Length: 584
Image (cartoon, rainbow, N blue to C red; front, side, top):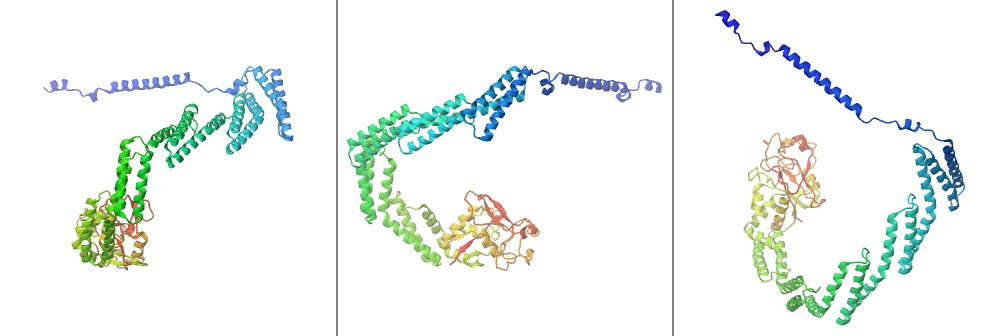
């Protein structure tokens, strides 16, 4: 039984695969060598570098060709001698031309390629063309300057002739001496445009004169003569558009405007009457006769509606003008009510600033009635003020709490060192105070005594605006200078006693005023929440700054009084603010 088991024992792959692995490895090595050999063979079939210097030595330059080049060089040397003694003139062109001709003959005589000789031929050609074109370009420039003087004196005919001649000479240079520095296709085109401009300018001037004539006749109410003059202006502008396209004088817009004005002449009498009535209304308004002015503005609006219906294409047709006359009519009619609203508003501001909140509440109720009456009776009046309406609506909502809010704010203010006109809130704005003023609490670290957080710079400014309504005095965010003045020097300050930081806050904001105040009496100027600053030196599109660090900053960072920038709309759970109030 043991023999049977031994003879039928199973063989595993690792016991018999040695020779097979060797053959596979050998095959892969052979294939790699074959691939590398194929790449090497293909590389030998590719392009190779050519030494052009060897090619240039593969041909013999005949002695006769060399003689031509020497003659060319000698002629150029003679030209150089002339330049050393004086400026080259047209009479010296023969030397340079002969040198060029000899160089051309040399290039034609050699059977191979001479790059230096080819470059010398180009240089000679450029020098020759520059010399040949010099007198032409000087004459062309002189003619252009003369044309400019004539055009300035409005001698358009003579100026046009000068521009034409200057353009012809520039064109001659461009065609015969294209390698010269004086060749300039753009200048030739510009001179041509100038000549066309001066051809069209007298026509435009005449057309403008006819238009001005028509306007004078309109002012004199001579409608037939105005129409005749305007027709002539239209005819000349139409000719400019057809015959002088591309010039400054051609104008489809002006032609259309003149045609509309022609239609407007027929409605001119109606418009003159409308203006007469409107002017009378202005005079009555200036004389404080507001009811009479209101009637006249309404009449002007009625006449304007009639004109709009009869002459729809007239330049005097205007639905906006109807609305404007109606607005002025209602403004005049509501003038007395508007003055009363302004006076009551000023009185309310004064009472609030003097902390006479009970009297101010009565004025607020009166203002609310007057503003509602203004809105309902005179909806188009300019005396309607959306901002004032929003302000009075808000003050009406909080009128029962005006005294409480004022007391709370004034009790929490402290003077800012070196700035007696303004006082600053001794703590950051709490969530309770923010909710009292704004009616909402956006904070994510919720707690009435904690500083409000997750407010944007815009939210903080809205809070300041509403609080200024309640106090009757300006309220804003502190500037960086005011903040640093309140903070004072930190040299001997033990920050742990005054600051909520990453080391003691538990990574979240804490109640305002819980830490010891700084020497100036202000709490939490550093740490707890970073505070928005007033942006007095920045555009509205730029970021705003915040200062002081927050509860997740290390003490080392807070000690530097960090100032950070952020978009004005950003809301962060570690950002809040405090306010300053003008108290003088």
